[in-house]
Length: 220
Image 1 (tube, rainbow, N blue to C red):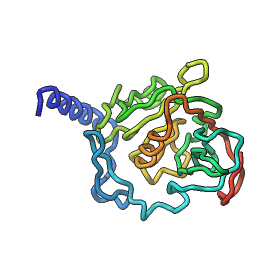
Image 2: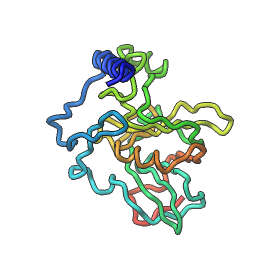
Image 3: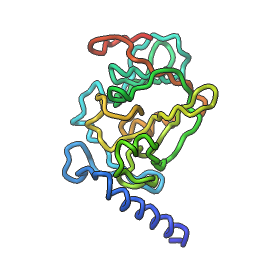
Image 4: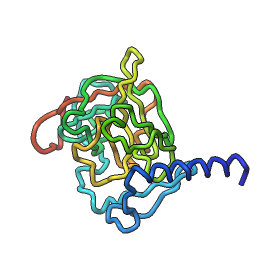
């Protein structure tokens, strides 16, 4: 092991220890929600136990009628789905967790930055609400809430919206209004979406596509 690798490991460990002071660590080992660990680019994440996840929250191809171009991301916040638009009236659908009441954001944006094992820097307004939060959690730390990937959403003007598409440490939260506005996904799903979305990908965050239970054919 090189000196630089050793120093990096120590920094990551130190970040994790600092984060543990303020952020609760999920009970990974005994939880029904996890199925071992997976290695990814020098770090590990807890694999989701999809056998306990309701089928409609799992990643799947669906019929989807939209005027958006293939490759566009559409988020239906009310029904807790994210769609990556494919061709021939189909889309790849992911279950997501969205912003809770008072923290939701709707509009159009684009992916201006992508991060592999991103570090987490709580924004000032979040630290004001939760003073015990650390100023920063290193990427790869076991309780970094962004998980293995993040896509950063910016306005067309270039201004940062402050919102992200990212992973989660809490797979049970997918399908709920739980976040401070960001869109959270299973770790496996954000890794998949990260590979599909280059910088410049268009993103549309909608209040809803339609009321009621999800249907086999969805429209925007």
